[in-house]
Image (cartoon, rainbow, N blue to C red; front, side):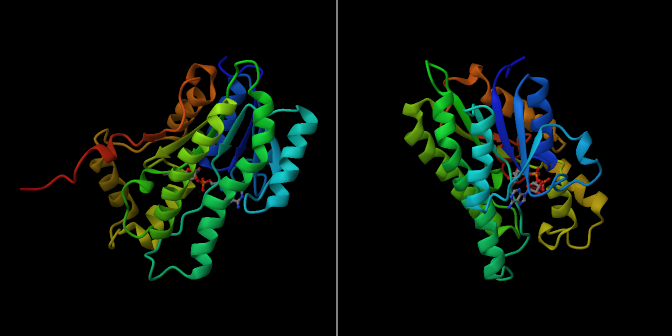
Length: 266
Ligand SMILES: NC(=O)c1ccc[n+]([C@@H]2O[C@H](COP(=O)([O-])OP(=O)(O)OC[C@H]3O[C@@H](n4cnc5c(N)ncnc54)[C@H](O)[C@@H]3O)[C@@H](O)[C@H]2O)c1
């Protein structure tokens, strides 16, 4: 078991990707705090009792919630080996159609949320990174922080900010034994992706959902989109001691999507 004896806190833990990470971390031997707005998060098909991890109610935009969550971890364990900042929202609009409230909300959850949870986790992570051990902090960027999907302007901007923040935190906290990385997924099959397919910003132009999904698969070199377990695999390695020298990087996992130029029909 790769995470035996470690303590982890995951935000957005009841979303598609968060659930896969929490379940995998428990299988790998970790004690996991599953933080989200509600016990079932973005997926309501399971009762809270069936879900993995110790639920912590945490709105990442609230500094008081971040402090309370870390106080609970401090009281229970006294340190935190792993923090995963997976909470996120996506507004599917161009900037002209985005209201100031939507813009501010996007930054509040995706960027300020990452800042607040990390800020209040750092003392506990410093306590974990003793005697040559490292602690691992993993943010969620996106391939949209490098290249843009049409109709996702605020989202793309927030993910670019998360990428820059990740590098800055890695520089500041590496000397303390805290590794900081970002996972940058491509298209991963979760409620967020389904909302993209059904939303106005997907550029579907009247296509059926099935046709749209097939078109997205076809444009990937791997001819599929990813699963939450694909993401959990990389997160597990980055969280483990095997990744002791990995820090400050933006790890793209997108089935090769961002490696290619648009295929031209000549
Ligand atoms: N699914 C994809 O294709 C994809 C691609 C690139 C990046 N990502 C990123 O991966 C992360 C997880 O996405 P997902 O696909 O699992 O999305 P999801 O919508 O399934 O889950 C997101 C979770 O975040 C929670 N959340 C939202 N606002 C919150 C807040 N203020 N405080 C605490 N929790 C909050 C939601 O309740 C939900 O459970 C996000 O940061 C997302 O931007 C996803």
